[in-house]
Length: 255
Image 1 (cartoon, rainbow, N blue to C red):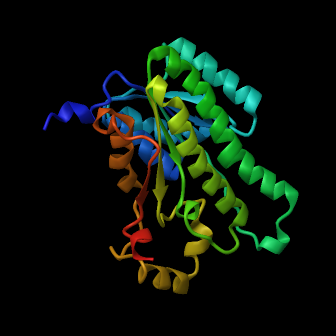
Image 2 (cartoon, rainbow, N blue to C red; image 1 turned 180 degrees about the vertical axis):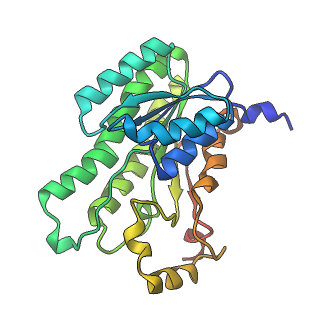
Image 3 (spheres, helix red, strand yellow; image 1 turned 90 degrees about the horizontal axis):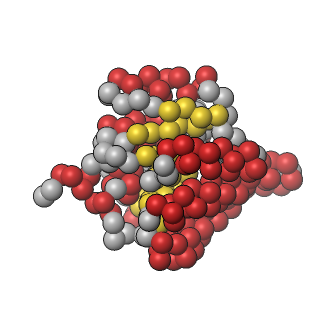
């Protein structure tokens, strides 16, 4: 097999929410595959650790302050970035927000914050990147969905709604943008312990019960997302669009 199909040399990749956790791991994996990686967060200082990791693998990261909730600002910055770099080849729509809350206690502010970040923000980032991809002749967009795109999780209704919507958006954009050679796919991480999800893992009985339902018998490690992200970003997946790949240790297959 020609290993070049997994190479991202000469590719420019934008990773939103690249400061920590899964976003950090994916950004590093893309850099290791040879891509020029632009990482974003709401503050530049939050990106320093990821930037250092990317630098250590011999790549020069580019840092950008970006709040996907602020659509006018984020789209303007992405447009300027694309112009300065001669286009963007890959977008990893990773920026997200979650807050556990019983459904009867969810207020409009919490609902709007989660959906503005996870769904609305993701769409307008994709839209702006797609403008440059159309001009460039194609590209790959990878949205970060969730197991909640498929199953209901108590106390996570706004998040579940946003991630279910993101899966639908992935499929709709894939069909609409295919004539422009823009592929739109998604990744649905299973149970990964991150700062965002740590509240669940503080319950030992919850961990034990969940592990018993995961066929591979372990929680995900952030590095487990590197391979699938590189695969969807490059030519190895050039005939794949509109799909969501679950990286979940077999959880969805077993229910």
